[in-house]
Length: 182
Picture 1 (cartoon, one colour):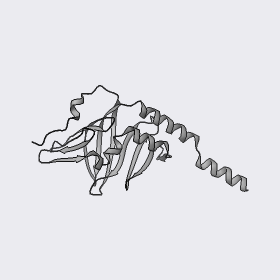
Picture 2 (cartoon, helix red, strand yellow; picture 1 turned 120 degrees about the horizontal axis):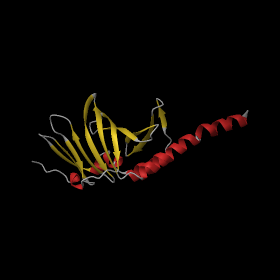
Picture 3 (spheres, one colour; picture 1 turned 180 degrees about the horizontal axis):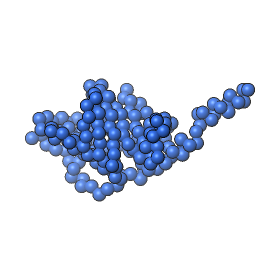
């Protein structure tokens, strides 16, 4: 009986299927230099959508489809959130995007985590960093990144779902120049 219990525990803690999946996700991420995608972002039950480009490491450009003409730009060190009526400049290191935009950081964390299967459609890796919880989601079939979940500075749940993902497209690096405050 004791042997059966030990074998059961070993099989539960080591799952070669998840190990193989994790290795494929890591391999795919290592080959990715940039991502272009559409997104839907839900904050406090309010949806916004738009288009983004991520260039590793730590650069992002997003344009929202809203009346405020909101854009988000990271140069790799700073992050600007600009609308028709406001302009915010943050050190990127003070945001959770600092982690999400760092491919090497994500890979190092995923290597040490086991994925959780959600609804037989998604794989989730939960990362804890500096009192922050970051959930990163991958499609279980394609193993592509499909989104993330964080909390904003006001402790609102922020869910970002990405679609129409294109990998390693030719992009103009000028989009990562921080916009000025007009």
